[in-house]
Length: 127
Image (cartoon, rainbow, N blue to C red):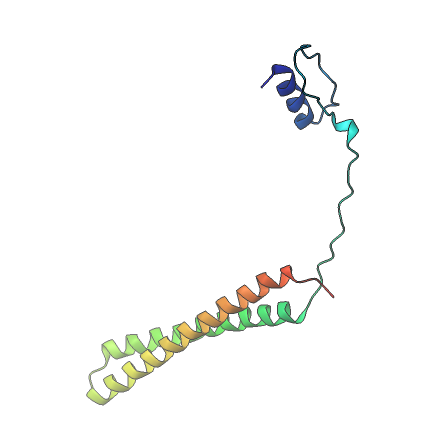
């Protein structure tokens, strides 16, 4: 690439006013300066609320809270299970730990689904 073109590109990227630089006569390429292309105004994009965004945010918050709480109950039941001495109590606490651990996993899946709904809602046009 010709040094003049590189210098022009560097000047245009740096924000300085672009000026044409002398080019060798044998070069047939045309350089367009930034002054030749008018700046396009940015489109205003208003981000509003829609049902998908609201449902996604609600699922994300409720799923995260439910996941945390059920995980806490499962950990408490498992700790009690490890310290229990009665066979019936061991079975009951283990079943409780497994049940709440499973609920924690499914509520985490619900939280992730809410997160995906929330993120994908920005792709939809706002009403």
